[in-house]
Length: 102
Image 1 (cartoon, rainbow, N blue to C red):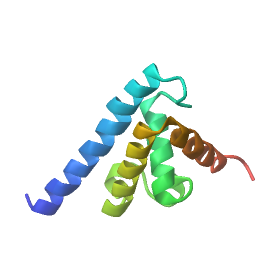
Image 2 (cartoon, rainbow, N blue to C red):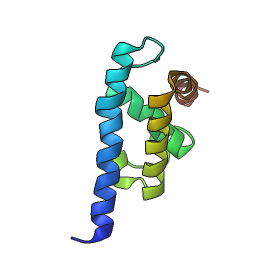
Image 3 (cartoon, rainbow, N blue to C red):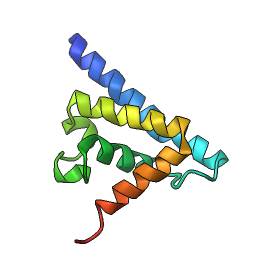
Image 4 (cartoon, rainbow, N blue to C red):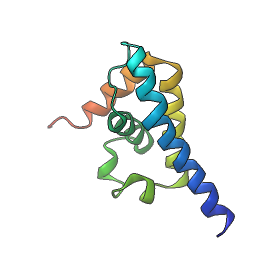
């Protein structure tokens, strides 16, 4: 297997670790987080990476069809939310606004 494959796999593992373990744990201990489920943190990060409702521009599943840059952006967003619950509030509002009917 080549280095690019391993690098992408590490990115996906980091993204999943933050969204599935780190953030839900923080949200359990800190009521300032607007969500607590891993799929909600993923929704927020994926939307931020896509600049809108992620599934409108990226096929499912995200980890398979997103570019490396989109995955890096999602990781950065997840890290921002880890460090700052208020950032999670702002990003969640934006993500929910992408889902409202016109």
